[in-house]
Image (cartoon, rainbow, N blue to C red; front, side, top):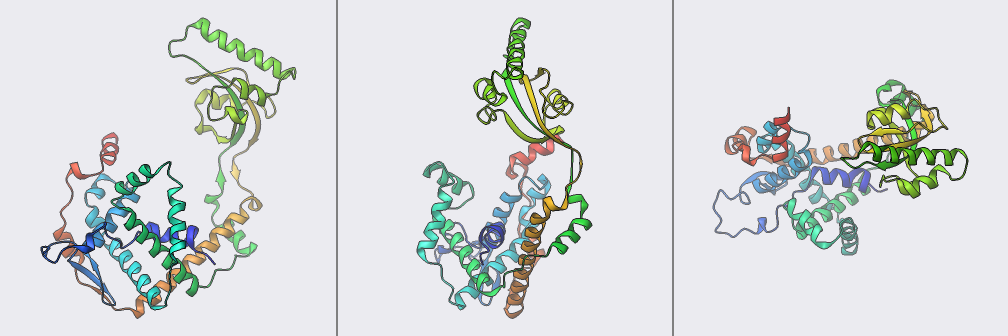
Amino acid sequence: MKYSAPIFLLFSILLMSMICPSGLLAAEESAAPSDPAKKVIAKVDGSEITEAMVLHEIDQMAMVMARRVSPAQMAEKERHFFEQALERSIVMSLLTTTAVKQGVQVPDAELEERIQEIKKQFPDEKKFQETLAAQKMDEKALRDLIRNSLLHDKLLEANVKEAELPSDASAEEFYEKNPQYFEQAERCKASHILLKLEKNATDEQKQAIKDKLIATKKDIEEKKITFEDAAKQMSEDPGSAAKGGDLGYFQREQMVKPFADAAFTTPPGQMSDIVESQFGFHLILVVDRKEAGKRPFDEVKDKIKGALKERDQVDAMNTYVESLKKEAKIEQLVSKEEWDAAHAPLSQEQVVPELLEQAEQK
């Protein structure tokens, strides 16, 4: 049983770690008493959670939530996320100490394999290091984060029974009680050939491009060439040309109006007239159309069962974590009011710029 990607590793990463920025816990003994690395906010079975740990957790949460919260909430991030950050830090500490007590270990080879998997997602080492720096981390902190995630993963695997796959009846019950999840708008599947227009194209240039597509349409109708081959040879849409113009299924609002109007009125199996949009001229082949309505149960059954199993697995994991918390000695040494008093809101200059831009546009 593995919790890694879909369940616990994702849980660990989203909840972030208790790892502080590199070197933070190695502060010299001469550090001032107000040093965040020295100020203890809570204890879990004697293990200390410092202000620096909570602040780092808050920063990580803010990065994840940056596009979902208002500028006002971001300005108050140290207060806004405090209780969640502290709770998550407590859970991470508890899982780590429990894993150590149970003798759970992460082999170096397994850790290195996971690190290499992450690095492969970046074009080069420089981009990897830049991304770490942007998240206020270095490679050592990342290794600690991944090691802890794997440690927690193994702990849960050993102590939480794998959830069973729900029955078809359970899935159908969810389907009937939650119709809002399965409604879909009208969709069209189509391919197209695009010939672009220069910004200042003359009427003569526009007509020449249009005539070229009209001739191509005639060749396709006379079976001198297939639509797919014509798209591969002619289309100037880089996203679909190599696929023979295939755009897959799309909803009306996903396309510009002239294109959508033509695609959703042309019968399946037929080509449209030549369509002009801000991108140029299009020849559209409509492949299929699905009417608006509720997706059939058989089409979504397996996804529902998978989602319900994952929900049950997370519930079981949370039940296990709660049992650990009941047995642990958890001391919160700084109240929410004391924390708030010590952390003033950020100035506008300190708030994420993109959030300020969003606010100005509203």
